Image 1 (spheres, rainbow, N blue to C red):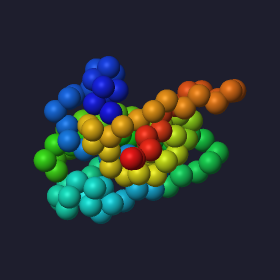
Image 2: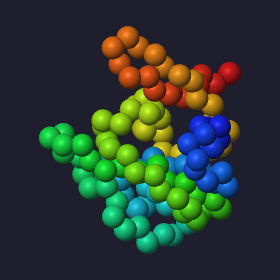
Image 3: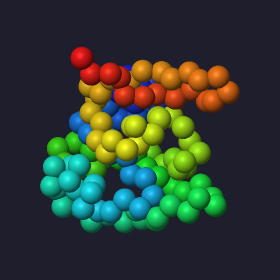
Image 4: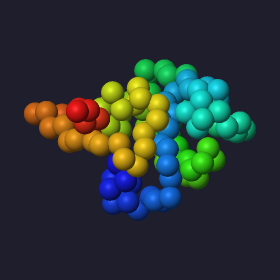
Length: 113
């Protein structure tokens, strides 16, 4: 995961990435940060399948937010659904490419040994 974020030009001093999809609540994000209390503003509202919704990849270090990267849910497909359902990734999280004919390539969580 660190290689992906570094190649994208994102900060490299993070220790957790939280996936904030439409409808996420502050307590869910705080739990992902390890219980740190944060005043969250502009969280993605509940999903409406008529139009893409704003979502965020939230990068944090030591329980404090560092950077947010906006994306459109569900149209942006950098990660497959198993990653977006997993609320927290670390720099050491291993990802593998997924190539399906007729579908944009994406990344998924690697199988754990």
